[in-house]
Each structure stands twice: as C-alpha cells, then as structure tokens.
Length: 298
Ligand code: NAP
Image 1: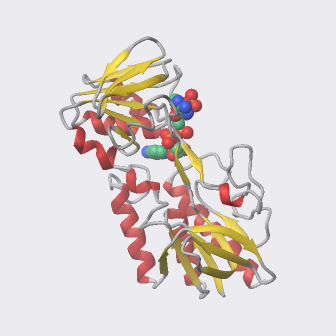
Image 2: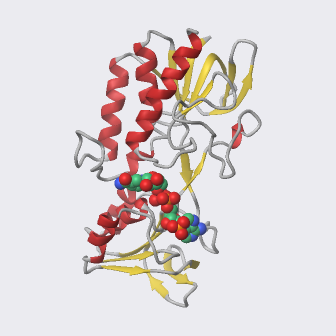
C-alpha cells in the first residue's frame, strides 16, 4: 500500500512527487512512457518558465526529472488502465495486469492530440502528418509544410518550421487567433510564412505520402508535411465512472486538486482550468500534493 500513486510524469506529476517525497510519504510515479505525459517535451523553446529563458521543453523536463530522481522517487513505466475504490483507498490496474494499491491517487495524465478527422487524415498519419514540429520538423528542411490551428501550439510550430522549411502555410478556421499576439506578429513578418484565415482542411491527398491539402475555400496547397495543432483531448475516459468530469471531459477540481472523489486528486492540463502551461501544471502538482498530504495525515 503506497501513500500516493501519481499517474503521469509531466511537470504536474513530477512536482507532486517532489512535494510528497519531501513530506516523507511513500510515492510512486506511474508513466506510460518515459516522460510520456509531458507534452512539454514537444516544445522546442520555452520563454515563459521563470529562470529558464529559451530552454527546450525536453531539457526542462530532464531537469525536473533529475530533481525527482535525486530525491529517489520511484518511476514505473506502465499504463494505468482502470481505477477502483477500495475500503483503504484505491486499486490501480495496470495494462500488464498488475495491480497497485494506494491510499490516495494524484492523476496528472494530461491530454492527447486532437486529430483532424477528414478524409486522408488516418491514411497519412506518420506519412507526412505530424503532431510535433520540434520532433519531426527536421524531416521537412527545405520543404513546404502546412500548420493547422490557431492556438499557441500552432503559432509556435509555424515559427519553428519557418526557420528551416521553404514555405510554411498556417491555416486557421477563424479570423482571430487564440495564441500569443507577439508570436503571430513574428509570423506575419516572415517572408516564407503565409497565413490563411477562415479555412478548414477538407481532405489530405497523396499517393504514398502527403502531397496536397485541400481547403474548404477551394484552395489547394501542395505540401510535403502537415503539422496538426488543433488542441488536445483530456485523458479521462477511464475515469468517467469514478469522478465528475466537465462537458469537455476535464476533471472538475479547483486549484487544490480536490475532485468529487475523496482521496483522488488531480493536477495539470487534465483539470478544469483556464491557463494550461508548464508553470501552472507544476503549481497544480504542488497544490494537489499538499491536499493529498493533508488527506493522509488528517
Ligand atoms: P488550443 O489553445 O486549444 O488551440 C487549438 C486551436 O485549434 C484553436 O485555434 C482551435 O480553433 C483550433 N481547432 C480546434 N479544433 C479544430 C478542428 N477540428 N479543425 C481546425 N481547427 C481546430 O490548443 P493548443 O494550441 O494545443 O494549446 C493547448 C494549451 O497549451 C493552451 O492553453 C496553450 O496556451 C498552451 N500552450 C502554451 C504554449 C506557450 O505558452 N508557449 C505553447 C503551446 C501550448 P478556435 O480558436 O476556433 O477554437
């Protein structure tokens, strides 16, 4: 019986682990893959995490990981697939069939990439369609690509790709971008970036790989790469019978990470909140850990 099982090893999960460990409680972090739920690893450059101006997401993740490992926090590479309430806490069922018991759970499983769901979007997955510019951008050096979306991910991806690609189209379904206006301004000043507003992808075509992206405005873009940045979907399917979710599937909780189920806490992007950033995920981790500590020693 562990005191606290943390699901997810992004900034929220690792920060929660650090706080729990420093409170002298048992803690284990379950991660689907190495820093698997840490979307920050996909950010090529982070300028809004205090003290680490310009660091890459991967490097920041490694630093937080090193911090957690220095405190001898145990990580287990497994996927938690189901949760059951027990008399003493929670039973966490892993994909391998193994089960773990804990007095409390802090759920920080984040969100996964939303897909486009248009003809061709399944066919060309990994054949020109990518969800991570900092991971796959190098494959498109000197080529023409399109980025889809109007949030910070789309803007950051377009800016990064514009450094190495021949041409970057940025396609957004509305006129107004929800991403950072400063980044948008930088993109507008780039000669090899073309911003297309009020357009949706209708179809992605090609023979073996992506060749053409057809927009609903009738425009057709000849590109080799499609970077999809249309938001994320919270990883809460397995929790819907256990705790209260909002209409979009996020776990309902305030800053303290207290959910509708006593002893089951939440932190990071998977929680209902306004600002989803690394700094707010880390802050959530600290708050949820504090709630879990008080729950255990109450
Ligand atoms: P997001 O902010 O939710 O933006 C998703 C974008 O995709 C929106 O512009 C949305 O359009 C568009 N979209 C959604 N579904 C679509 C569809 N089916 N077809 C076409 N377009 C679609 O997601 P995100 O950019 O991944 O960011 C997620 C969170 O991480 C945000 O809170 C963001 O601020 C944060 N983030 C921060 C940074 C940074 O600070 N540097 C970097 C990356 C991400 P509408 O605008 O019309 O809804």
